[in-house]
Length: 73
Image (cartoon, rainbow, N blue to C red; front, side):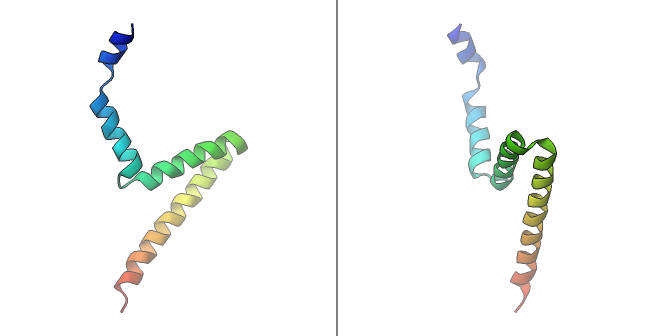
């Protein structure tokens, strides 16, 4: 039984997914989603979705302001 499961698992795909999650360009978003799941387990799904939305909004505003401030003399 263990051998059949071992053949089924694609280790290269798992390594690529882990590399994307931990060091990819969207790693911050994966961390926010993980934190939202933690908030959902404690406070409930609606509160977690509001928290995730506000967090994503703040992240985008900071990114946009950072780009605009970088162009100022």
